Image 1 (cartoon, helix red, strand yellow):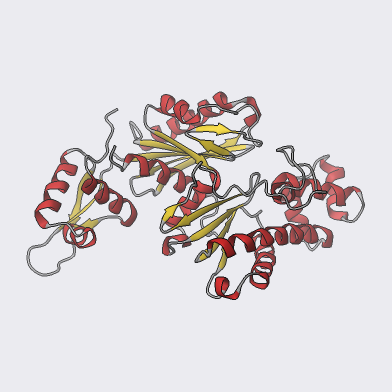
Image 2: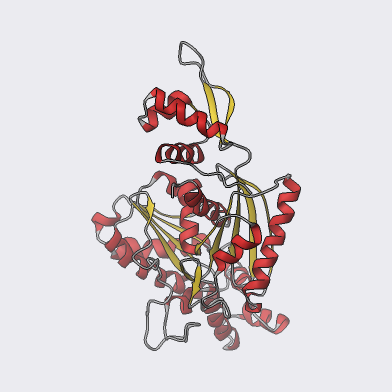
Length: 392
C-alpha cells in the first residue's frame, strides 16, 4: 500500500490537529497553528492532493466568504491490538481514532507469539472486510509486559515471547507500519486522547488486571524514560516475606494486586473457611477467578471485601510515592474488576489523601477511567498514529 504520511513539520502539525480536534475550518486551523494564510493554503492543498485530508463541507459563517471544513480523509484507518494473558481484542478506527468496529476472543498466549499475532491479523482482516476497508494506515499494539524497540523484554505474563520482534511481525502480517508498547503506556495514551486525561497536561494512569503498570503523561506527552521502562511498578517490592511473583521475586506489587495475586489470596480464604461464598464456588467449579471474587464481595461477603480492600490499600501506598514524586494533576485508574471499582477507589483515595502532602493532593482528583477497555484500543491507534503523522 501507499503510505500516507506528512512531508514536513507543518503538515504533521495539521494532521495531528485534525486527528485530535476533528474537522476544522481553514481559519480555525490557521489560528491554532499560527501559520500564514499562504502557507496554510499551500500545505492543505498538498495534503488534499495526497489523500490525507479531504473537504468535509462548509464551515459556519464568520462573516465574509464562507470557509470549508477539512478533516482527515476516509482512507486513513488504523488497527489496534490489545493482548492480555488470556484474551486479544482488536479494532479498526478512523483517522480521528474513533472505533469503527472491534472484536475479541480468548487466546492462550502461552502458545507463543506467532499464533496470537496470526489470529489478531485474521480478526483485523474480518473487520476490514465488514467495513469495506482495503488497507490500514498503521497498527498499534499493547502488550502486558516491557517492550524495547518493538521487542518483548522479560515478559513474565507472556512466556515464550522473550526477545520476539512483535512490531516487525505485525508489520509483515498487515503490510503497514506497526508500533508496540507496554499496555499501561497505551492505555494512558487512550485516556489522553478520549478520556478525562484529555484536559490535563500531567497525569498518572494506573492500570490493573493481569499485569499492573503505570503510564505517565507529563507536559502533554507520554513519558517513557531513557530505556522505555518508566512507570514499570509491577515488581516494586512491598514485603520481603510476601508471596512469590510470576517474575520470580518475592512480595511484588503485582503478586498482591494483579489478577493472579487476588486469586491466590482468594484460594487461601476459601480453603480456610473464612469465606463461605468463595468456598462454595471453589467446590462447585474447582477454580476461582477474579469475577468470582467480585461476585462474593458485591454480595457482601466480609472476607472477599477485606481481600479487595487490602489490595487497594497496597496500591494506594504505592501511589503516595508516585504522587509525591511526580505531582500529577489527576490519577486515573483503569482495569478494576467489574463491580469493584468504587470499593477499590474509596480505599485508594483514603490512603493517598491521608498520607500524601496536602500541596500535592489539594486539587488532585483520583478517579476511575470512564473509557473502560476502550482506552487500550484508542491508545493503540494513537500510538501508531504518532509515528505515521510524523516526519522522518
